[in-house]
Length: 214
Image (tube, rainbow, N blue to C red; front, side, top):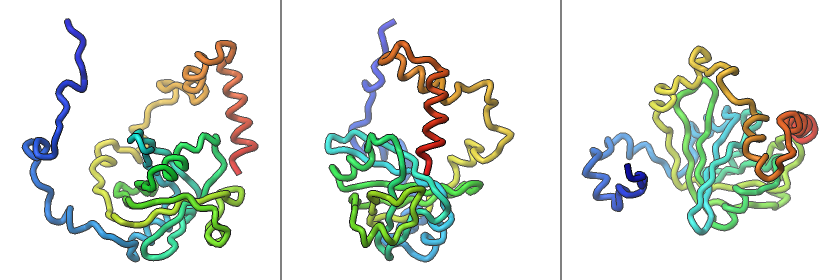
């Protein structure tokens, strides 16, 4: 049997997509805002996690989680919010992408809540001291912050969370059925360093959490 090319049947136009899908309901279109209203501010204030989507100038995409105490993302005004930088691995994937493309997309997650908040818009990375002083640090004072202009703001429907039962502990896979974080990292790193062991990775991860979380 010939090997399947997954891209062979790629859809090449929005018109073709619309042949397969119905038009969106009017309420799905009307819910989109172009500013951070009082309700969006309330949701951001209680969200301890935001997923940040970005891309470089060649279109390569990345999504990374940013977390902190509820309210760690600061609403600067009706049109802008800021996400403080926190200690990480210094790859700077998201920051480099935002600097290159000037755009970002956000999904705010609230534990136990199926509905999410999406904010998309123009973005930049800033190290302006006056801006950073307004932010709530996640550990050490931030060196930079991602600023996003709220060009598109809307609450995202809960269907994905309802289907996945994400917040239901009874559906969570047992630890024994999952690779440990150290096993995952070891599998991806051992090609570059064949001498590395799972125990080495466990020690490195524990040390990183102990010394670099704040």
